[in-house]
Image (cartoon, rainbow, N blue to C red; front, side):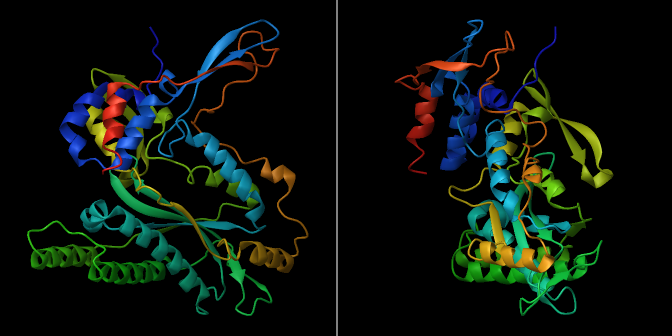
Length: 403
């Protein structure tokens, strides 16, 4: 008998009690909230509504989504809305994709201090691009950066890195002309790597000296020594900056961005099956030629890895810098278009390419009747959530504010 593919929420539900008993004390409030929201998503716990087709009378229940930014189901709609809002920000130039990765030696610091380290990672990666691009020996122009933080590898292990999407050029220092990059080359990755390393480690040391970095150790002296050992190990490793070839103009950029902006650690469509407490999912082995492989994890280990990538509460993972920054965007992009000879912004046709990422399901109820295909489903009744949440949810939420 064919069995439908599992989802992340199903795996979480299967081990939730055991996981909380063993690992609950170490969870952050935001991780607990993710467990609460994902297990309740699209269930009666959140309420919903009854849909009916006026043509054939077919009825169906649609339960509400949780809206959590770490939910594989809910991010598709958010991505589409974001892409639609960003369509007018694109310029008629090629775009480049740069990836800045922290060395593994810094993982212990990042895991213990995610808000500080993630913030430094995004900020120094963007500052690196802007600084090297402004150098007359390279581009010699003010460019812009869209930076998106990811903390995972394809196998769900911890792997903090930043995707930077950058237009192929920028404004001249006097803002009188557009300076375009070479067709298939933006900035030298070796220079980017050295500058990135210098900027990040300087910022990390400053944060430590100001007491913003916590290191688990018996006393201050040993904490300082441990911090220095980790930093020294990071210096000895390569700081990887990867530059992908340009991927075309606005139409392709919109489709490309959908793969990164609202992606989470793993989407439901990558899960193959879930049987006997084991989860099997697809992943790309980047260390061996991007080969497609299948990984098998216990449900508990799967949930543990998934929770590694829950962001701190209120953390902004998509940021804009340079000519794309919020305070400069409208004025600078208008000037860029004028200098590029573009009379209008992105056309209506190109904005229609803002599609949701591949493999994610729509989170709104199907409006066309699935029974007759002729009528449109309408809401005839609202189903409120139950007045008394289950004991598991209550236990999760009860400690959330104190963590």
